[in-house]
Each structure stands twice: as C-alpha cells, then as structure tokens.
Length: 350
Image (tube, rainbow, N blue to C red):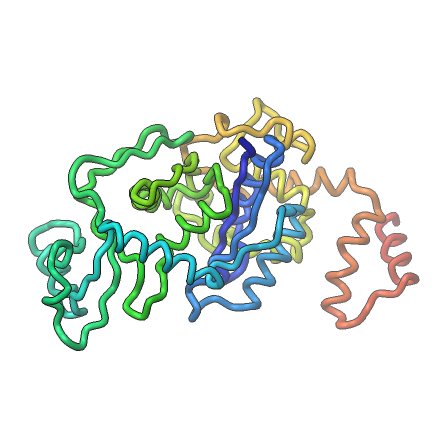
C-alpha cells in the first residue's frame, strides 16, 4: 500500500511554527516511504478564512522546501460531498435530526455543570420521531454515537488511548443551515484523498476518537494515527508569541535559512542518536515514527541561532544572495538588478 500523508491547515492566520513542524513530519514520512504528501486547506470557517492566509501557507511551505503532490484540496468546495455522506448516515439510521433549541442546549449545559458532569448533549432527539418536531426550529444532523463501551485509538506515539463512549456525545454533522462541520469534513476528505497515515498534534486525540467512530459507522478503513506532543516555550508553558510562535515568514525575515529552520524543527521532538546537524537527504533516509518523543519539545532560540550560524558558514555566497535579494526587493518595492545582486554577493564575501 502506498503511504499517503496530509497537512491540513486552517487559513485563519500565518503558517505558525507548530504547523510547520507537523507539515515537515508528514512530508518526511511520505518521502521516506516513497509515498504521497498532500495539502488540504480547511477553509470551512468562512468568516475567519482569508486569501492572505492561504497565500502565507503556500509561501511558507515553498520557502521551507516542503513540496506537495497533486493540487491542493480546498475543503469548502467539497461541502456537497460531505452532505452526501451525512444523508447516507441518516438513511441508514446512524444519524438523526435534532430539533433542540439554543435555549434548551444552554439549559442542558448549565444543568450538567451544576451536577459536575461534562456539558455534553443528552441525546434527547436521538430516538424521537421527527413528527414531534417543534415549529420554527431548523434542525441540525447529529451522529448517533455508540453510548456504551469504549473507543480505542492505537497511536504510534501515545500507545493505546481509551475513551469511554459515554463521554463522547452525539456530535453535529450538519449545521442548521446545512453546512458540514469540521469533524464530518475531515473524515470524508481523508477517505476520498486516500490518506493512510494521520500525523498531527496530540491536541487532536479526542477528535481522533470521534472521527474513528464516524469512520467505522460509514464502513471505511481507519487511518494509522500518530499524535505528536505539542511544542512548549523554554519555560515549559504552551508556546506563545513571546516564545517564538511566529509565522514562518517572520523567521525568513529575521535571517534564518530554510534548511536551518527545517533541521531545527526536525529535532523538536524527534531524534537520531546524538546527531544535531541533519541534511535533508539524511532526514528523509532516517525519519521514522518510533523516534518521536512522548514529551513536549521546548523551543530554544539559542539552539536555533547556533544551528543557523552553522548553515550560514557553510552556504555559498550566491545562494545566500538568492535568499536575501527577494526580501530586499520587497522592502524596497522594486526589482533588484543584476549589478545590485553582484554588489550584494561581493559584500558578503568582503
């Protein structure tokens, strides 16, 4: 079977450092196994998705040297296909229309909190006849989740992770306006794109359990799961802008070389003995999932600076000029002439 991985960012902002590492791990795993690395833009959040963010993702990926196979998939354009699967589940009795009002749902959550229970949907429309539906309420479509037993994610980093099904409520598949939710869209797109291996942050573990239930209800094959610990700052807290959670383009503008950042991201949570400086060719040859650590990696600017200095010292002047010129041109608002390029290269030599 051909290995197929995917990187699926939401275009609501820049390509941040955590997303770049996820993309890198997926790219390396596909290249190591001579498989495919696909790109999917999860643009279902229409209010927050922007063309500028999409461009930033594409540019960031290209600058890092993470080329993708096939044309990028835009999730929103596939909403009719997602709704088709929701209808299939309705027809098979594996999903149902829920007419609970916003007020009912709010009351449900408050009562759950008062009783120290998770604020999950109580399934009140799960087995009711739609003929009982109140007037003036547009229904959502909910998945009829198994409410007994457990769902187990066989994860290649985390091991077996068990979720009690009673804690996973009947998630919404289609909103009241008929648009599909993230959970449904991801499952359908991963299947249709032939994704065999899902490699992403461990903040998606609960999503994996919900998605596995849905995949099995449809009758599809569950992809292999690998959930990577998140990146923390030097102080052990969740990575934020003060730690370096910037867009990839910010690192480019600060003078970091793409191969240095790629090398550094590789070592954030993955290791190959004591090797620190790892070329792209070596990374593709050596990369595996067994060497991904189970603990959160810590972002360290000093280590990145040292690694970047090593790559700069080894780099050819013409290559460095080719990286600097577009940035200078962008700042100057004009094209850099060939004579100016020669001067830049000469200045580097001097």
